[in-house]
Picture 1: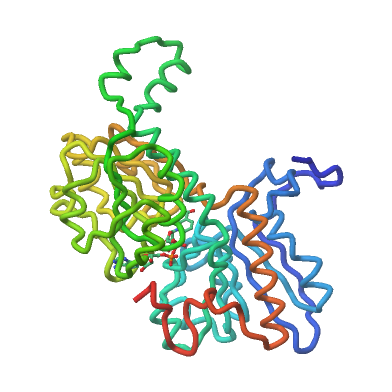
Picture 2 (picture 1 turned 90 degrees about the horizontal axis):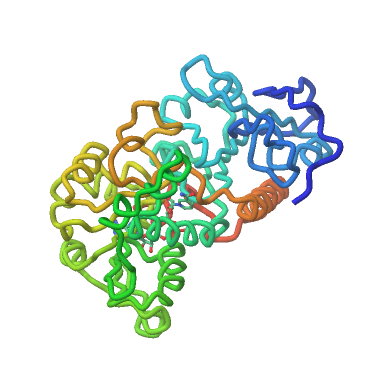
Length: 374
Ligand code: NAD
């Protein structure tokens, strides 16, 4: 890890704007979070200050590149700049919520690129109606998320967080931790969604000596892959949930998965089971999860995704018992940033040259949504 010697003072501009643009050039708008003093690390590409490290390249091609972290409300920089932008780059970590209304005002918009995986912050149906292209850097951060899910499962099952908090506060109380701490060995774990991340997490959990590794997905992985991963498909979600000590969510947020873990479904889980959700916050009902953590129906809930990001200071998931919550971090390690930045640059380059993207990167193309979003 190096610190950039020439990094200018951390004077933070939430917006960089340039007035001139060559004929035929595009206006590209990027929305990223501000990293302030942490932006000094040149590997930290996914922030507004370093703007994916593509400014010089874009400008050398005569394009105009505007970036901002200001994304909320009708007077935001996002709204102002979107009006005449051709290409929008967003990330799920600081999601610019691109509603139908915002799309209607974006007269020049052609392409929306998600630097990462998960494009539910965009109204995909509205984008399809407008004939826009939406793409992601598919696969770019799936191992980062799978590693984090293993971490979160262990944090919950071992009741790690209260012990960590205790020593930081000068305390020492073994009983307060171990009265609710277990081993993962011989437990049953299920993943809802067995796509790229689901399979990566099953691969990693294989070494834990589980009783059973189960998955629920619309698609079967096939006998060979199931054998490789040591997993078994369950065709009924509720039956799978009734067997699992730990459930991990790995589906996109779609019309079908929004609110999937509501009060009724959580009631179908084994009492005291753990739920890990790094997929999207809105797949779980906020209040139902909080109440289940309070009642003990859930042994704990962990994840890095929230129904609104940044989450409000009063969001109940911050304060509910047995939580392993963080800000949206799992898919944006420095390694992941390198991959999704390279993938974004590659797609921009192809767009300028009128070349197709890798097939799996298309989320909306010629009025159609990718199958995982249906
Ligand atoms: P993927 O497309 O490879 O896999 C998704 C799987 O979900 C597919 O197998 C699909 O068949 C299944 N699925 C979709 N809808 C379903 C439904 N209604 N019922 C059953 N199965 C269904 O995607 P992925 O790369 O594994 O990513 C999954 C999601 O994880 C992303 O869409 C994104 O929301 C989230 N994600 C989060 C982070 C993070 O930083 N927290 C990073 C990357 C991705």
